Length: 482
Image (cartoon, rainbow, N blue to C red; front, side, top):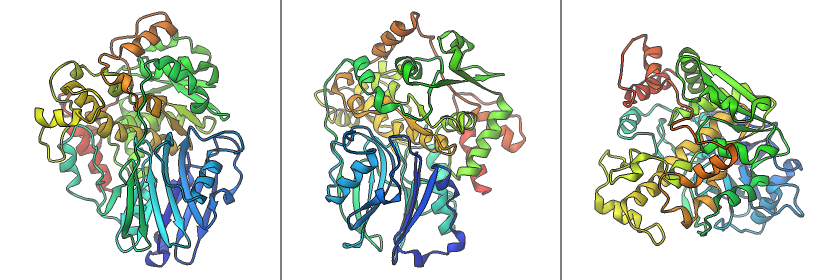
């Protein structure tokens, strides 16, 4: 996973505040591009083909930065996906409707004196930006916050308490926002938006999920050391099993005083390559505090902390981790999808629940189908999934590891065959086929969310584990101390 930082007018910033450590830690090669006004900085982690050198980011009269992967970039004639992207940008082709991948991109046009920002339509890769008299952008929030001396937005915690997980584009720093997913927008050098278009991926209909996953195996593994996750549950375990011959190792966590990932994972057939990451409440809380202090990022879900812990254990050997977010939302894994109730993620920003009429309107956006359960799935895919996916990206990237998620490939995410799915039956069948036994009822990585409040405040409050308000207060308190 690469990193980048850019500013449209370098004369408007205090260079004593510039700190690109969090951008550099995401790659093995680092280099700047300095123009008359513009400054761009790129770090590169080569995990797809060979790295041709910094000139690959020069595209005629344009210079671009890029982080992510283009999975359907042609292999023949190109050293890697960046070379293919270079050719596309040089041609002035900004149509990304058929580009299957996870990516954040910036393009500086030297002739036109414009900057174009692009973010993938699923929202797997973060792209933060500041737009006050000039444009500052990066896939890490800390690099921007430091250079503008950003102030904490006190209203952030109120917004977060109105949601289960934080799913908005406003961040915890004033004037720093998350660039909308699925958008291509061109700005002048003062940050004025000139034009934009929405990325509209083509929908397909193919119900053979096992074949779809196997067909993309080459794209989601790497010539660099690749690791699978074995939580004991269905999603990541299925990916690890199907891609077993492309994986160099597998990782699980074993909690010493709580257990979500059962030690039964030792019987899943990965014993020779299984890395067990052991932690307890104290270690998890220490890792949560360390993650926030190092990244300056609020963990929108507690999975960020789990990925941070795993990344620290896997570095420096591992460079790619295959993850499994999205299976519940795509294949209907949550129990609420079996009811007429509102999903806990699908709330408006002001805290009001979505009424039945509104949910029906949303459901009409899903091709050929129109009911409340499908509307819930659709909303969760579009709002919650990006906040979960960027967690894997950000936290693993801090250990110079790239996350790749086969379930968020366009052939699955934009597939009408799965719109009606409730109960995750397709994946359960694959699990039984590859392991020879039924999956456990509930397995996966969690954390010590409300315990973090006691850790930070020196208290001993016993709280309903379903109420995660204390977790949010604890995270925000750590951020406020920065």
